[in-house]
Amino acid sequence: MQKKWLLQSLIGISFLLFNSMIFSQDLKVRNINFSTDSTNRVIIYYDLDGDTAEVYNVKLFTRGVLSSGESKLIEVDTNKIYGDRGYGKYAGTDRKIIWTPLPKDVIALEKNEIVFEIIPEKISGTPWYYYVGGALLLGGTAAVLTLKPNDDEQTNPPVGFGTPPPRPGK
Image 1 (spheres, rainbow, N blue to C red):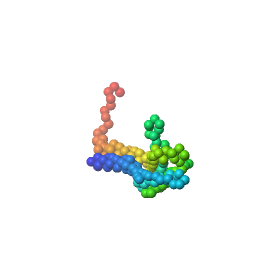
Image 2: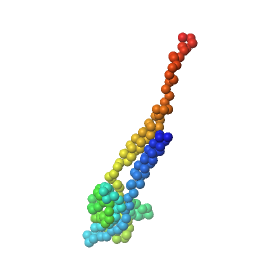
Image 3: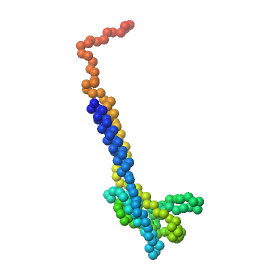
Image 4: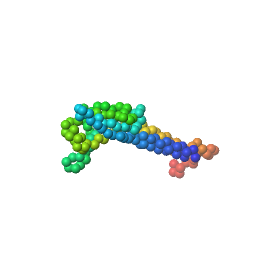
């Protein structure tokens, strides 16, 4: 009875660890908008919902429509942007990225042909292999405890019997 309870507890803990690993990675970027200044720099504003203590890698992408009609996502050249992008603690409101676009990009902006997308990636936190190792450790412990016989289940040879008779023909 105790083994069954222990096994169920270990399975439950493994399930909780696995779910926390999957569902803790939810990030949401909201309120993306932009403006331009007198030097044709583009200032992109955004809010990143996430843990303010965590480190994120924030990337800026543009989505444009190609001549074939296909929509394509292109990462903005990191040499042309600065601000709240790259690696850092960027969770919060009123984040800002400043982009110095090429002349062809300025024309596309004026025609409203560019859409900005900001894609964050969580960097810090517990690595996935810790969860896998913990699950393996819990599973191994559960296997050892469930496969190991209890002391009362062990059968001791009966006491008081002599040695067995010799085999015939020997």
